[in-house]
Length: 484
Image (cartoon, rainbow, N blue to C red; front, side, top):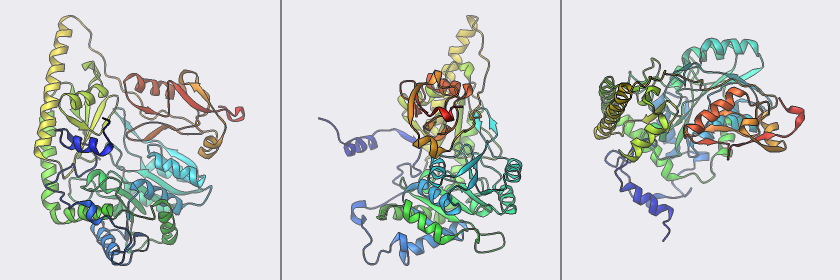
């Protein structure tokens, strides 16, 4: 008999698989207690307010959230950070405006570019060990000088791997050019509650900040926050047209918002407010002890980067081990029952948070030590046979590309299919990206280059999941007039 979706979910909860992935509640029922959700799954009935016209309990809950993050105003999001990003960009731009965009932004940013027919100027992040790192404030300033028509700047900080940019410095520059700064801080809802963690962009001068509460705090999947930041020295922000922002929020959010999700947001923030002085230092101790123990390993290591979120465990595997991130990800799941957030060529990503347990960290550490010892013994035998050690090589995470038409033109154009190997010089008619994290390697309207094709092939050969390609075929714009 075929199992239904609920049966599969119930069966999964009985397994001993530990979640080093989002959502941030980690199925920790000791920390995150809630009655039967069917009992309070309601709609906008009398006495329970309306998210789209909040006047009572929801309004109070959002005001409490704003106080917690020092925002001028905070709005609950029940369609995830995606709807907040779409609303923020649409509210701060007019159709056809030019915007400055970090190339490592989530695909929802590109969807907003499409909807508003925006003209993007791309900023490429720095790279280290094959990972996209920060956006330099000097690059932001140079781009704003070169393109005076830019109306908004859109960045992601922290990155999926937890690396943050100098938001305070960037905000100062952006405002000097009379532009608006929008920060996708989806992975930073836990920022600002302990000195050893990065500060939230809300307090660093960003105008609009979007956070996924469910990613790093104990909230239900699909719940998020949109903050309006205060202007320096003021309690309000004249750069944000709030009426326009509310209008777009009502467009991109469901007209029947889930009261369970909203209650989950409030519960999560209440836990942070009441227990932050216990939970965050406890998490930091787990992380510090874990990183120290990892220092003695031969083939596995944890990324250490100055401006980063310590709760993101980016675990590298040396190429000289003869293995890759895909192999490490799957052995952790299949042999040790540890579900990580993401796999990549050189590393895997384990997400941690205040709902994680000491036992969870101990299981991960034990598994990694055992795997490392096995790799060490295996490679010692190879060395005795005279096998040469492989040199470590790192490839670029974001090969440079260029566009010949807008996203809208490419998506709406006539399309045809082409073998990836033969795509050089043609214009992409679709997004190609690795998921997670959902950051496009190539965007509709951009030209396939040899470097991009090689990067895609490299990931496919490693066994990673690549979206936007099927049986080695990619979608290209068939209009010869815009062929690269």
